Amino acid sequence: MGLATVPAPVVHAMRYVSDPGYGGIVGQSTGDSINIEAERATRGGGTYETGGGTSGPATERYFRSTQRFCELFDGLDDPTSDLSQGCADSERLLEGEQLECEADSYYLGALYRQTREIGADGTPGAWSASGEPVADQSCVTPADLAGEAERAFATLAIAPSPIVVQPPDGWTLVNVPTITYTQPGTQTLDTTLLGIPVQIRATPRSYAWDYGDGANPLTTTDPGAAYPHHTIAHTYDQPADQVQITLTTTWSGQFRITGTPTWTDVTGTAATTSAADPLRVYEARSRLVTDNLSD
Image (cartoon, rainbow, N blue to C red):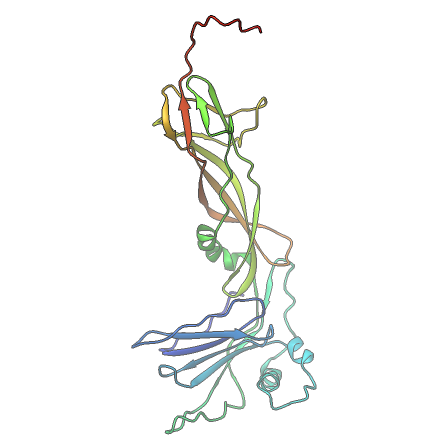
């Protein structure tokens, strides 16, 4: 089954109660724009409320339900609470057993909608006793999230690769190799896609070194190494008061639904750029001297 989404009516105000662990959202509305707020709720009991006017009371409410969620909150001290009422509604509406999703999938409860009237004085009435089924329960697979993963990977804050320069003191010499290397590592970032917790893994694939003297960048899959086992170096042929070495790293990505075992490749790549401290290039010249250098 595919990933079900809430229908998009013409809305001026919206309230969303999210699963735990997700950040809150606040906003405001003017004209035809949307005013959004968010707060936390227990997983499985999230509700989405929509209203018909700026900052006005919500007239529709969406909630997801599972039989396991209802069993968890069975026997609440306050059976009239919104949580308990939503559970009772879902018990009445949910047909059959909860789906058993594969190890790489994420269970998404059935989606229902409730409505209420707003009085002439602006006082909201009671929510409808039963919810209208909107979407059945489903198992969200990595394939359902692939497009969102691609978009997220292109914008995630991947830490740029560090640059190490040898010699290390901010200067080098003309006609002497200047060694550079990096020490990158795989990075795993936590985020959410369509409200579902996922992990995205970034792995460095190639490196483009620009040595700041007008020479073409050196592109390699080798991160380099320190002297005397170095594999990447650049020789400056002219002195310079200041050059700056930059490194552009290209990353490939994978993602998985948090808690599941299998990583899925992300289409496309991401790039980061890092810069070393300015480097001065000296020209060394030999001179005849009268001093005995052996002393």
